[in-house]
Image: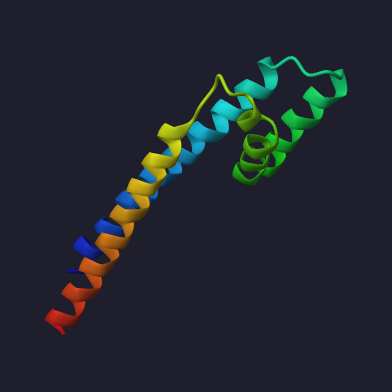
Length: 102
């Protein structure tokens, strides 16, 4: 039972980790290829994204990336929502199974 419970928690977490890595990579590539008004701004954003990880990517997304109406990342937020729901469902099922077995 413990092994099944562990797998039901690990799979959504691994998928969320992969999703966050892809999001981080997309924002890093965008910061490297984007033409900023000042040359120092590009270096600053690349350093922020690299050194702070997902937090820096989220800051970059809301401050810079989101203002560009041509690019959209709605798919990221939908997948993140679906993974969160799957994680919560697996958590609830795991809790119910552990109480029923006990």
